[in-house]
Amino acid sequence: MPFELFIGLRYLKAKRKSTFISLITLISVAGVALGVMALIIVLAVMTGFEEDLKDKILGTNAHIVVLNSVGAVQDYPQLMKKIESIDGVVASTPFIYNQVMLSTGKNVSGVVLRGIDVATDAKVTNLHKSMVEGDLKSLESEVGKTPGVVIGKELAKNLGLFLGDTVDVISPMGNITPLGMMPKLNRFRITGIFNTGMFEYDSTLAYVSLQEAQQFLGLGDVVTGIQLKVRDVYKTGELARKIDRELGPPYHARDWMQMNKNILFALKTEKSVMFIILTLIVLVAAFGIASTLFMVVMEKTRDIAILKSMGATSRSIMRIFVFEGLIIGVFGTIIGVLGGLLVALNLEPIVSVIQKLTGFELFSKDIYYLDHFPSQVVTSDVVLISVTAVLISFAATLYPSWAASRMAPAEALRYE
Image 1 (tube, one colour):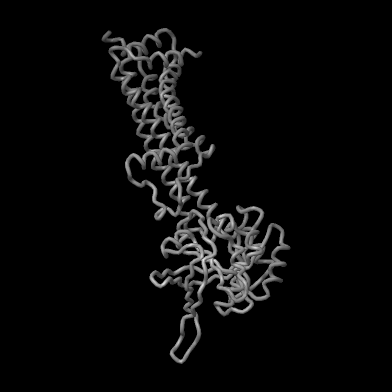
Image 2 (cartoon, one colour):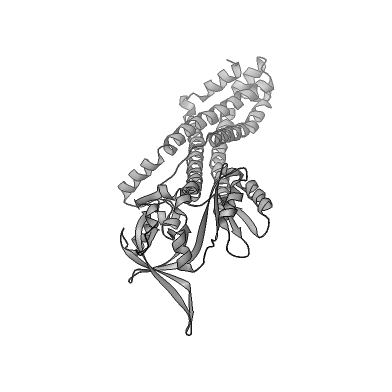
């Protein structure tokens, strides 16, 4: 062991006359630990939010959507074959998108009505995996029977609907009469209820078969667009541009990142800002490390003079106090990492216990769009936080250590 490290460890041990300095040292360690712990927990939660939100978006929506900029898409079976021949595209399915109203007589709600091809939708989206009652195949109703509709769990709760109930679907784009435009109304039967876990989707989406949507909306044999599933979800931007080149005008492709760029950008920005803000906790702890070293230097003035008289260089004196400060920073970082990982990896049960004890809902799905508390620890984030904390601790040791190394032995021992 280098003698500088040995002496630095000795200076950390408490003595009767340096109890106050030892207390400040413990506070500095606790400050670093709390800062690191807070950073790990917050970044794990925000990463969990981001990944869970991406899973919900990609599970309900397609990776890429191809639209016609001048209207509906005609001859969509041929267009689907052409798109599926492009390298990187796994599957495709047509869809219809329109806004309607659902009415039960007592309750009314505006929703987005989607017409889907039951045979191919499962190849592109994970809607079939989100079904909690009924199934998507029930949308293929027989001729003469009430057509089926699948709605979200929250929408069913808001309208008081259950499996097998009927609901009136009202389209504002109805028939033209001498009295003006009359809304079109058709009765549908609830044949399925889904739960994606994302409140915004579960409360605003309703699905019918492609044929029923075409007939109800009076579209004929056309669709709104084509949904695509791709091989690599993080290279959809490049693939969308390739599809644009292959198809040419008036078709254009939009990937899931473009369609959700506002919320994804907000999450990324918030994560960066929180990292910067919480790093200030470590900076405050670094001031504690610097204060501890200044007091140790003042107390060990005689020791420094004796060491220099025995041949210790200024660089060796500086190393003693750098090691002492680093020990505080590294020890605090280790405690913070262990505590942060312990909480982050068990966050959901911890939150559940707190909510049961306090009776207060810490996490409302109506606000955060999700139905549970996600937490995902990323190794690179933990490494970045640890390195940042140690570097800040190291920076805090430099000036006090330099001041100690500049001390002249004669001046230090003049009044001894």
